[in-house]
Image (cartoon, rainbow, N blue to C red; front, side, top):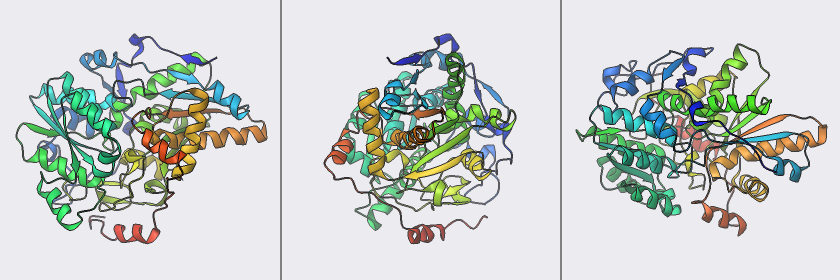
Length: 451
């Protein structure tokens, strides 16, 4: 029997939680890419609406969610928390395994949690069009959905490797009225420059970000929108964790360990940040683990330093774990985890050892995803499967020791548009890849000098 913990739609949070209020070490300020000086609010007004800038720089613990946003959240929120009893039985573990499932959103992932408020705040300030990038296509489809609801236009620069691998994500964007093109493209100056130098590049999120920022900066009716990394994005995602705390109360349980996939850092912080005060102030013995691919080992092998958020050096310079802004990872199937850096708020907590990080190979991740699908019925996105792999490992350790730990998987979305990746796994065509340390060193040698 599948055990589900549901909340009433009136229990959708009325405020977002801002972890910046509870950090051990204050967040290092973002820097202006031109001057190297701390970024000012006016520096961001060319591509962001005033309210998102205010949220980006805010250190208040709670920020009100507009009722118009909560009304749209009601289309799919609150999302369910499941007890994975069939998975527990298949593993023969005494551990209790839960998963909070964000794949029930219209876009099939957690991304609309921030796409809706971002589109809303831009619409309120008269912006008619948004430009963005997307890796696996989940963010691009989420923003396409959001702009559609507010009668706005949307242009999505999709990383070439994912553009080729995931055609149905493109179909979703087009269905919601957005334009989606392969990045690097010939529609921006920076895209043309990259194509001239590297015509066969698989692309990267850093390149796609540069194209979207250039698009926004050169069109008066257009702002830029980002689905990860920035403070306001992680703020909006905390609806997940705030619901989760209530659901664990319904279950009369509490997690011992939480696993979530991590690329730029939005889903996992959204899930675990509301638990940070429990750990820091209430001294709860809670382990939180960010899970990434060995092909893009940002938290596990990157340097904690200031770096550009994009390849062209147009975006703000952020203090984060980074592999270097010109890092171009291989075209692994977890396209949403291919960013060279991570969210500064998340990196701050990893650096202060509040959150841990682990990295995994493609084949072991897909093996775990298959075990999960064959017991729980849900086919996970390749990104989400990075959280399933260590959760299963932990459950098997409990099998050996007899411990009854409570394990949470942050299941950020379904894999219905990633079935070619599953076919590649079943056919033995997936290659494990560990990014060479010498290439990481080469990329890190090009960090900006504002350290």
